[in-house]
Image (tube, rainbow, N blue to C red; front, side, top):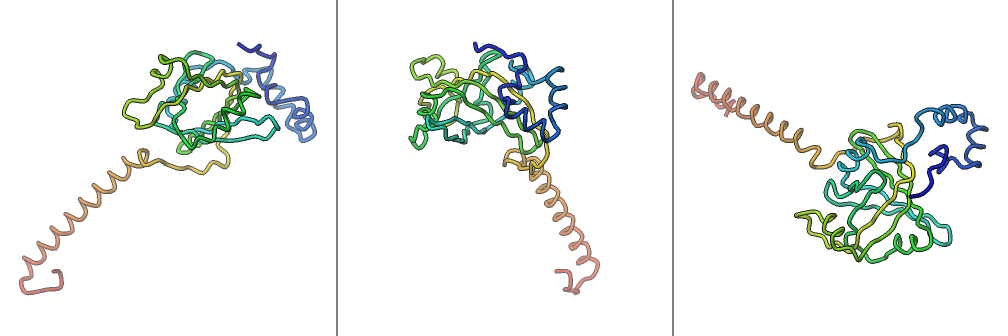
Length: 216
């Protein structure tokens, strides 16, 4: 396991970043954060549960030339799993065969996960080290999602070095079909009930006013 620094947030708050924070007036607040609970490096129950609810996230790696690359990873809810208190893992499903993330990791295993919950306006940033595993059948089987028709090519292991949550500012709520389903079903049932009530009222009016065609 990598050595944990005195302040876990130093993985992102480099000396250059701290100078900018000082210049722009936010260093004092972050210094207090560092002396308090600070950022975390172990996967606790909150992060474990949050990760299990994700059906997609963003993976960032860096090429040997220093260019960052961000890739969307998706699958059934729960495909991102916590194996222990420092390791996240997920199946690498067959895709467009560009292998950019794999190639980047060969030269630089530092990576970042960006986990979004648009419906609840939450986001979690995770720094760590990434590796791709192809020769562990038991691990691959443990990451396979039953009923999901996708070929698992390899396992991806992500050793967590730091993670932190972000505030909800500027996150536009977005909802999946599954998240909207209960509300849509309730609306459809309500519409059906109102339609039946209208038809019943029209029938009563027709019966009370024979020959009047205005309500037919």
